[in-house]
Length: 395
Image (cartoon, rainbow, N blue to C red; front, side, top):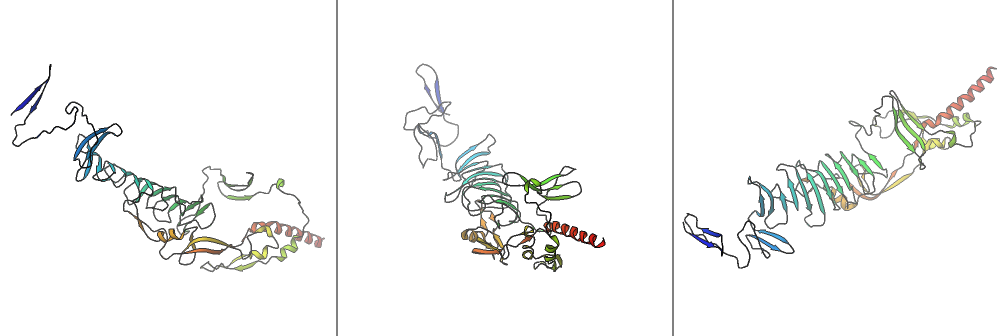
């Protein structure tokens, strides 16, 4: 084996040794000034796009690594020869724990769970994604104006003004929690139907719409209602055995109190009836009143106005003409009728049925209601009047 020894001016030497193997070895020195072989690697100047493997340095960019592999341009491995960080060939993506990142930054545990920082193919929006790998996102923050909601999603979307900026989706559209662009909360269903701040949809055959439980064995206040001055004007309370629905009746709220009015005459004007409700498939007959017939006699018992309607704008209707969601832009409804593919190629279920329709507006009935408890004072007063007449006749 041949060797070349280069001795220093005063002391020290460097030996260039040729290995005892067949073949020719070529050592090419760079056409630049600098230290090339020490305990440190020193580099000067930028690297070029065609470099197979180069180390460079500039005062602005600092250390520069350039590679050109068939799979990755830059790979960093640990002492077990496992890839720690990878930059796929010709991309700006960084993979940690993976050699095939599909986002700007992807962190993988080596299994199905990943964390990603991504942009859309057009670069028009950004995403922060934590994915469980089971055909859906565990957590997602988006800045676009479209939905990409797979099963198992928690989505925060700061530019989604057409549908729901915040979505928790465990499975189908009927199993969701959503907050729309107006701050309204919707649980279970495809959309907020009216202007209610909280909308709950459920199937009475197998679920309960709202369940409230008092953990105190002696009961307590389940719900309390306040006026705009924060005064308590009613509530729902419970004890260990029963529930009480109360409305305010404090003397401090009342004036013009009269105990001498004629109840019997008013009571005789009421027209109790038997009927069934049109949408009751069993046609069960019940006892009750027609709301508008009571409104002139006991107006405080009636809510709403006879034949009133409310117009809802930009509505999605099911095949029976029932409103599924509003307000929804027509373009969002069109896109929402078809399943889509998310950033990772997973199928996102359609938001609206394929046989649904979209209308600019739809008028729906505002049905009148009756609080029959408001008739109790009239009944009590009538009984008192009749009892007084009976007493007088008996005398």
